[in-house]
Amino acid sequence: MAFNPSLLLGAFLLLLLVSIPITVHCKDHTGKSFDFLHHLEGCHKGQTVKGLHALKRYLQKFGYLNYGHDHHDSSKNRNLKHANNDEFDDLLESAVRAYQSNYHMKVTGILDSDTIQEMMLPRCGVPDVVKATNAMSSRKMKQSKLFNTTPQYSFFPGMPRWPPSKTRLTYSFRSSAKVVGIQVLRSVCSRAFRRWQNVSHFTFQEARRGATGDIVIGFHHGGHGDQYPFDGPGNTLAHAFAPQRGWFHYDADENWSTNPVNMTQVDLESVAVHEIGHILGLGHSYDRNAIMFPSFSPGTIKRNLRADDIEGIRALYS
Image (tube, rainbow, N blue to C red; front, side, top):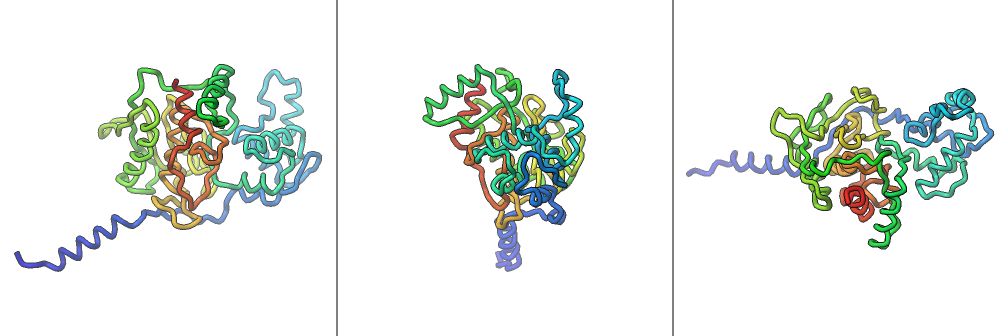
């Protein structure tokens, strides 16, 4: 057969395309909504500072603040009055202190630079404050003795889990926004599911074509029908729901990549591993090395489960 140089060139170009990391450039990353925090550094109880109402919304969104939602609270009306103003009141100070405690910072109730920097990091949209039951707390203590660690993992309220008979979970894809090709997403998610499969009793398999899986994964902009709208680039990266809802949503406005090379790109697989943890029933961990830590720095790759993640999933299903 005669040598055909065009075939060789075509094969080389195909190999080159396969080896190049896929990056998706979305909207301009200038108006980041967490930027309002810059102007609040140093604020403390007793002050009235423009922009504190936005901080209250932030802390309420992520589970630290609750104005007027407790019907047994005799101060409900007084609390509601403060929900949308710019006063640094007692409830706001308590919320800041709780945030600082969760993130292992110096607990002062003051918006110091460390607290502001932590709050400004892009993060998962699932709220942070999750309380374990007494029974599960004692189980965590047994786990900590076994692994010689201090457990930092948490669970959703009520500890929702997949039933014992449901160990094989299927997943499918449905997006309202086109961000990456389906083959890329399949590959990313297959690897992410495998990490949890290797440390738990679960197995994962893509649902047959046209079927809806136990878990549905997709990209969406802004409001997308689940009552938890995304907030544009650089803020909430993704969110997922506790068992057995099985929804995992990426924010389509982020600058996603399969292999980040700069500080504007977010790793698809790292975020997938985190959100799958939520789908299985894990809340956030306050071990900064854990996959389930809430914040995530763009430009980094964080795909490997750590001891706290593994202890958490085994404690939940033991």
